[in-house]
Length: 129
Image (cartoon, rainbow, N blue to C red; front, side):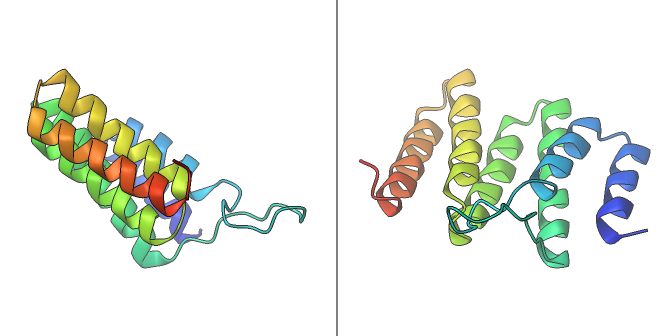
């Protein structure tokens, strides 16, 4: 059994169904940084990254269940930052948009501004503005 499989099984065993779904999709997809025109290869995820992804997805799910929107925002923001460092722009944008949704749902203007700024930074790095 691979480490990915063990983490997936543990997420389900512990009752974190949404974290399992997200973890599976994040670790079983085509590499977003593969060269255009070549065959898409499965993304390679290090053990440290897998554990970081799992921990933050679980923190977001626990926080959501407990009504801790700040915890959800922080967990998604950490994931967005990790993917930005890896130059996985689409995934970084996905998690920054999740942060923006959380901020808007709670009318947290400061968090909304931070999420908008972070999204702008990703688009700037992509030179898509």
